[in-house]
Image (cartoon, rainbow, N blue to C red; front, side, top):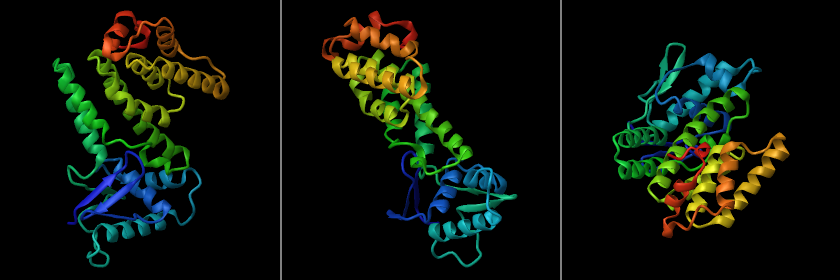
Length: 276
């Protein structure tokens, strides 16, 4: 079997034997993405049809899936004999499953490392947990699959994965504030707000972290941006977490990180924001 590496936490990318290769046309790439995010679990043909085309698939949908599977098998294993299933993309009942090595998929590495971080956190090993969270998040480069899908079923599957990423970002950011290390999370929090333009939780944590790092003006600018977006696009005011984060900045309860900013934040923060 060839050495395959897959990336789904951002634009879909594929390497074979250390060389990046094209996974094919859009729908074929999308089929690969839907199989990869299942992490080896089987997906029925009917599910794949729904994921690729939504509620109005073409009459040729099943044949198209068989065609894409055959093409992907040749990409994965160029020397594969004709009509052979190979060792990677396997038939399972009336569907398929994609088998990848333990270190070949960024999503699997992300989830495994995040679980290790949570174990360390539960055991009170805070610095170890912090470092493991950062290791997990380094696998993340943007919206999963770069939002290649365009139907509601597919969008829901990718949104669920993105929410998992936001959950880990939130856990890591709260821990970084506890440890007075707000700067360690700023890159990932900026990435989170870029992916989740209306996600109030990650915006609140970015505001907190910026303020704890001594960047109060930037924190206030982030609040104004998300407030305008919520009012303009949804017709709602910021929720309790955002309002509490904003209030703390206005009250100047956060000092620069070098002066104990994160600890000062914790001393005066509103419990509604959820830092513990």
